[in-house]
Image (cartoon, rainbow, N blue to C red; front, side, top):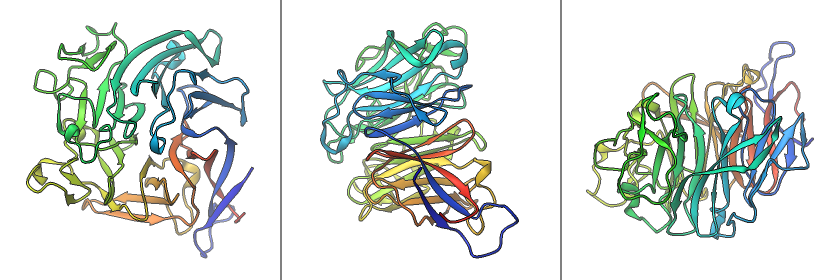
Amino acid sequence: MAAAAIGISERDEKPLGPKFLTLERIGRFDQPVHLAQPPGSDLLYVVERPGRVRVIRDGRTLKLPFLDLRGSVEDSGHGGEQGMRSIAFAPDYQESGLSYISYTDRRDTMRVLEYRHLRGDEARADKASARLVLSIPQPTPQHHGGLLAFGPDRYLYLGVGDGGPWRDPRAQDKRLLLGKLLRIDPLTQRATSDGATEAGDRKDDGPREYTVPRDNPFVGKPGRDEIYSYGLRNPWRFSFDPATGLIAIGDVGDAMYEEVNILPLRKARGANFGWSGWEGNYELTPGAIPRDRTVRPALAYPHDPECAVTGGYVVRDPRLSRIAGREILGRYIFGDFCTGRLFAFRLTPTGRGEERSFRFRVPALASFGEDRSGRIYLISQNGPIYRLDPARKRR
């Protein structure tokens, strides 16, 4: 196990209390970009960009993957923005065995597929059970987004980038799914029983095998029913904090600013995050989008020398409480892909953020992960995955 540590304070701590934060390496993979754990399971699932999902059981990476789609996945695009993106597990996973995969196919189309694990073996997907849920053609190899996550409302959310053209206005066009946060029910059989409705009969980007919650903001109004929020450039990583009802979105910037948006999930309903009229708090196109009609970022930081924000999680791991001089419990942890720098951010009652940085770095920081115990994982696309752990002594 490899470890990197940061000293927090020179003050004395309670006997046997944690005084440092460490990064414990839990494995090495082929361009990992996502980690998730199903409800009720002890297994960890790691998404590799070339098209595999690997499984960690009892600290050991299994030889056989959960799923191997390398023959179908396109991962050669500029900047590493194609490939397999993420995995999400149904809230009723222990009964249904359902998981959802997103990836870019050979035609530059983002695809979301449903799989069921093999009977009696949750470490292997049944490839014969594959069902296409959604497909979204992409105009360029860049800004695909692709994170899947079930929200506290048990609906499936999908972050979709604007597709890549410089300052392209697609994110403001509610007729398109690009530059949006989508919200759907991936199952169709619940259409009349839980408040979902068949997806609207507008012109579609591709096959739709899902239903749309009736309380999505544009149901019955101009705009695609699937859209929950819009005006995003590339919401590469977002997360939910059930303890506070917040959603946190790391939206990758263009040439000037990276931004983090943190707000109650209910206020994200129908929200416009401003792209491509605004980047951070800078107005790119004067007068195009009034500021009072957009969500102001909770945090915006200069693009140079940073390059791409990597959104993380609000830390809820009880093991990380009482770190001397560096309380991070309840703070939002995120980082930057190019510099590998890590930050802990807290939103104050005034709406202004307080930010703290860490001394250690994770090169090519592609993503964060969280398990059912609230433990936080840091994922380097260079290969290693680390877990954020407490320690009494510097190592």
